[in-house]
Length: 207
Image (cartoon, one colour):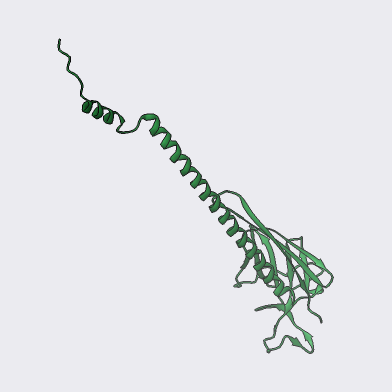
């Protein structure tokens, strides 16, 4: 039997052939590292996204609460203690000076005419209902003792002055009304809620 010697060149080619490519362990190590890097990037993105959504939700609920409080204060400033009553803590009914006889003035014989815009002898009602604050014009007549002002005026729109509302509290103070509005919005991404409470005070008109 003749033994054929293996030349140096053949041994070198075999070594290079065996070293070409990666072993299974090496591939798994690389994949593990890549998955770790990708996971870290994804977590960082989700955390940043959640913070952005939370911040945006807080700004929205704060603006919504502020808008509602400012709208109500603007009209309540025109009222007085004897032209206003509370229904519980979340509903207020009141009158403001109104040109009931359409003569271009809100006074008759030196006395103020009281009512609601476009509704002679009517009232304005702000009420918390179904997560909103709604402004409704009531047909009247105003009766402070019975605390009534009729039903909703026919043909008059109901305005929404606040959305995403969680709580509203009207509190009578000396010569005015304290209003507290809490709004809340749920983050779609995280399922958490952002809430904001805004408080304002309406000082009644001086007669």
